[in-house]
Length: 350
Ligand SMILES: NC(=O)c1ccc[n+]([C@@H]2O[C@H](COP(=O)([O-])OP(=O)(O)OC[C@H]3O[C@@H](n4cnc5c(N)ncnc54)[C@H](O)[C@@H]3O)[C@@H](O)[C@H]2O)c1
Image (tube, rainbow, N blue to C red; front, top):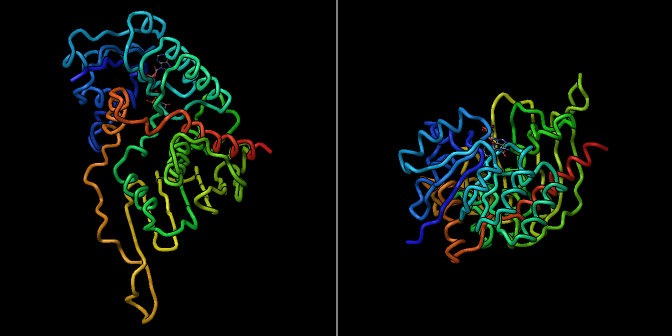
């Protein structure tokens, strides 16, 4: 079997430490997912935060005694060429790190979501990737998750009939948006909103290589903080897609829990899917009224025991390098998502 060398910039939570979370499905970080894949050899790590890098080295040395560590991306990129570079740095470092890594011309970059803080930065990454001919896989993880793949196949097979309405909802305690945090990305519209919008795009898209044209977006509800009106606490945006005339994305930053759900309503059935939610119903003769049809649980659809969201993503990278598959989440899909977020931000600023 051909082995690919992999290296990682950013050995923080998603890069490394979330892999130790006892409740998360494993593997739960890039490091653990790379180490688990037999076609990959993890050879180096880089982080500006010494403690995190040292802990990372101690752990990875158990699998590769020669693993190298670097405290700057420059040294890391100069030291050797890698087949795969994972970029798992904070949002405000995506642009610089991605441009440096792309210029080093690895065979593939895995870039954490969102592509960048805004579409202007995202365009720069896209142009550099084109110039240097470097493919980029964007880790919008739900695209790789078996439960969402079942939902997409259900929609694409026509089981839902015509999709009439999609309601997607994210609830957290983090502010939805404030211009003050534009430079850090520390607001939920970007931080987790990117996952919500991306999975809606995935469920409704025809082809992952296509540029989606955003149609008729309007904000239908905004709630602002009473004391700081610049801070958005709730937002609902409505737009149309080729597959569905009524897409609604709602994000709340006032909740004392984390909720993530998508409700897809078709002429023949309905899917509710999200964190801890997997519910497929289909039109059947009603148990309540003679001569009527109602929605009953679709017994043919089984919830997968494991979603394999991380291992499937890394396997997609390997299959792509082996020439067996296209990238299932790429710069185009990532930019389609960022374009939706950018338009919501633009309208919030009006
Ligand atoms: N896919 C997911 O579900 C998921 C989950 C969490 C985070 N993320 C994304 O992953 C990225 C990282 O988030 P996190 O929660 O792991 O953050 P984190 O702060 O825990 O880790 C980021 C690490 O990057 C390092 N870093 C920052 N700039 C650097 C640079 N220029 N060179 C080298 N190292 C640098 C930091 O020192 C830190 O250790 C963000 O884009 C975030 O949105 C994705």
